[in-house]
Image (tube, rainbow, N blue to C red; front, side, top):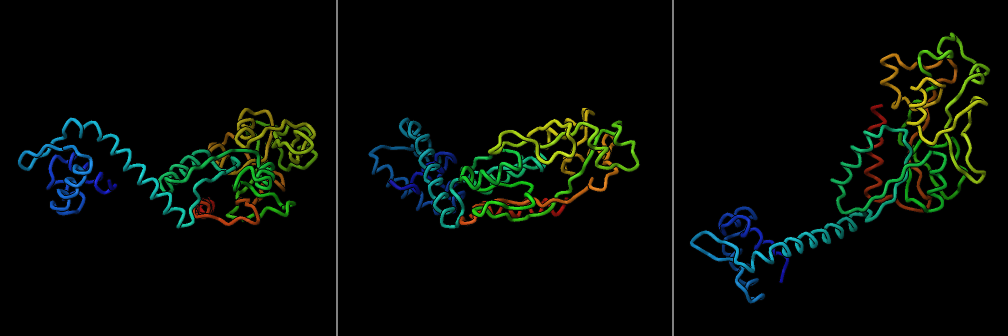
Length: 292
C-alpha cells in the first residue's frame, strides 16, 4: 500500500468522478484507475462503486476513508519534518522573551511563524529581561529575545543586536513631576517609582531604581499600567506608551535622562548555531524595530 494510492483513492471519493479527480491532481484517468485497482486488489475489497462516469464509496470504502485521510496527513507531516531538518530548520525550539514589544505584535508574529514553520514545535515563555541571560546560560531555553543588558557577564552567552528601542521616563500628566520645567535626580527620589523586578541569587530585587521609594513589578506592561493609574513614574519602552503620549494622558519628564535608546536583540548560547526558524525570527524583529 502506497501513500500515493491512498491520495488518489481520496481524490476520487471526494470528487465523485475519476475524470474530475484526474483534473484536480494533474494525473491521467488511466493512472488514477490503475492506482485504485491496485489498492483494491491489495486490500481484497471494492472501495468504490462505478456507475458510468460517476463513483460512490462502498460501505467498506466509507469505513476506511477516515483512516486513509489520517495516514496521508501523518505521511505528509513526516515528509515535512524531514524536509525541515534537511533545510536546517529546528524541530523543537524553546523561546524566552520580555514584554518590551507589544503583545499584539507577538501574537501576529507567532501566527506567521506557525504558518511558515508548521512542523516545528515551539514553546514561548515570558520573563523579566534580567532573568533571560541566565535562562539561556543554564540551557532552560534555546534563545531569548529582549532588551539587551549593557554588559554581558556570562562567557557562555552571546548577544546579537537586532535594533533599538527608545526608553522613556514618564508619568501621568497630572503627576507633580510633570509640572516641573526641569527634573533632577533629587526630584525623582521624592516620589514613588515603578521599577522592574527580577529574581537572582540574592532573591527578589528592584533593577536600578532611581528612587528609594519604589514598587517593583516584573513586566513593562505592569509598569505602564501603574503609571496610567497615576501613582508614580517609570521608565518604559516607547512602543508601549506612545498611544498615551499622543492623547496627552501621559508625559515624558523634563529630565536629562528621560529618553535613551537601548539595544533590543537575542541572547543565544555562544556555542550553538542558529537554525532556520531563529534566523527568520531575527529578520522579522529587525524589520519591525527598523520601522519603530
